[in-house]
Amino acid sequence: MSADPAAAPAVPTTAPSPLAFTPITTRDVSEQVILELVNSIRRAELEPGDRLPNLPELAAELGVARDNARRALHALAREGVVEIRPGRYGGTVMRDRSGIPRALERVLGPSLTAAGAWEHLIEARRLLQSAAARLLATTGNPRGLARLERHLSDMRAHVAGDAYSAALYDGIELACATAVHCGNPVIGDMLLRVMDRLSVLGVMMRIDRDSGVEVVTGSLDAQERLVDAIRAGDGAGIDAAMAEQLRLTTRVVDETRASG
Image (cartoon, rainbow, N blue to C red; front, top):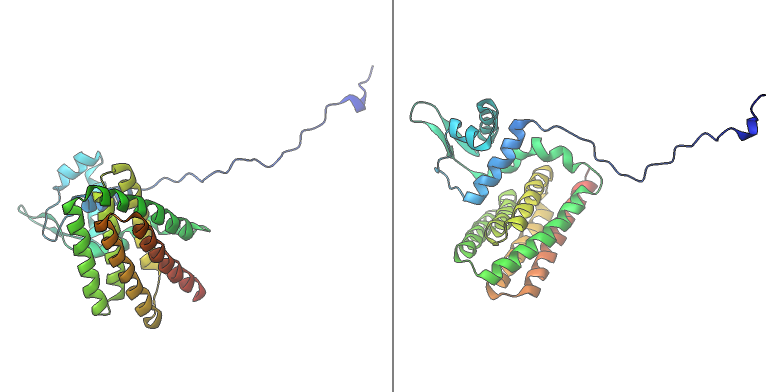
């Protein structure tokens, strides 16, 4: 007896999956070391001339092969962040943190090409830095406040000298100092990771002189008001200063896109 074709089960159709997947990528170990070194440098607030652990110690502390630690150090050295001194009494010393964004560009740059990535980072900075600033205002950490004043002083000097890129990086450093001294390591580490990516965004942006004057001087004014609000424990002032800072950042991003 033949089966009734009408009784055959229907072939299921494939419906679109409601799940949104992020492609799995394997980051080179030396790139992971670069990221950890950068944030360790920021957390320790290393100054030019300060020594980093020697290669065997660094590899052991990070749990990586010496070759991976060596490649990471050389990547930082190429951008002038550290200096590797040969010889028995050599080693690795801190040189200039302003090269950090260029060192991070190869590691983090590809992640900034996704649609909406910049806007999401800008919003994350507003939320996290405002929270970190409020915490710092509550504790009144003298060392943290002194670091903010130092970066603010550097920013004033760079604005006066028309050094736009350096002035914008001072703003990055000020945010990182807020992260380091806010007293909450979870919020602090999240903000540092966001600032890593925004610092790379700064390398990718190009600011012409005409718009640069307005953006950088406006940014300095916003940072001045932010530090004043932190000192005064003024939460509303902190939020207002951050909103203005991020408005300027958004403007630069929009102008960069418009110029192609």
